[in-house]
Image: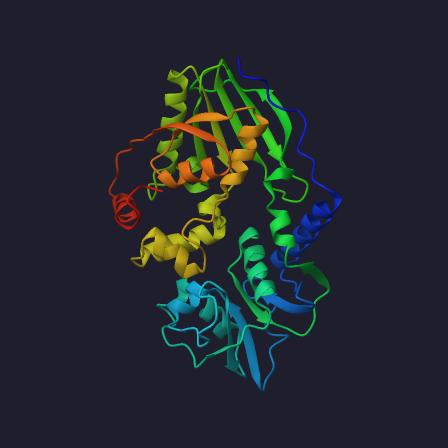
Length: 365
């Protein structure tokens, strides 16, 4: 029989914990609209988040104003990187001639407003002041569910080091924090496990369905989708996939549902709603995420792998239509014995959503 879940956690040293906590404080500051200083290579880049910050106070009335935006947002704005040696995936720094209003800056960084404010500029690319710091700031914004865009300012009280962003997202810090029996409609023999780490306030959940034995469980990695799972949105197939997976697990010997709090493929609820608005303008899911300044898929599969490790589940039969989930789990040390497709019928509201994902990626994400 498979071993019981682990009570202990892999040891995370004090330096990693301190780094993760600095990142957590920085993310909290960004969500509150406070500037953050990101240190790398012996210098500091002080950044005010465009989405939440009070933009009026720091904007000069003469000279120039410098913004940092994502490479994909710069591409949407037809801003080619003017520095041949630059990494095309690095954030882009642009300057605007003052005076500039807060509304004008928001229109530059928020793609939902592109049709309302189609004419932007003039801007010009600048040499990126501190590439590691700017890159880390983009990651901190994503963790905070914010648009990845900043105004460079003179000072900041909250300081974080560039490498702290990686420590914040370290799945090794994840532990089992709670466990209870939870009979569900799919199977009355179910147990729920809650997972938490020191810095990240996000709680992940595993539902173990059926009676655990030595066989390989049926496993589903399900990213949180409030609109689909709870509200019954017809724009996606998340809710039906979740319930189909639970039903299939109920018919198997046993299974594990990993409910990952990675809304919108890791970009957060508010940004997912922005992506919905872009879809209403005619963009597909892939284009919408990129226009917002994010990767096509920003989910972290190491979190799922760590949860399976703590549950003592080294091998799985994975329920997914996405081969990248198989690759992501196997890259983190989990053996995927079999991929089991999840077949869900389209409806008039998500037909385009499903078809464009197949067209662009060859599979449903």
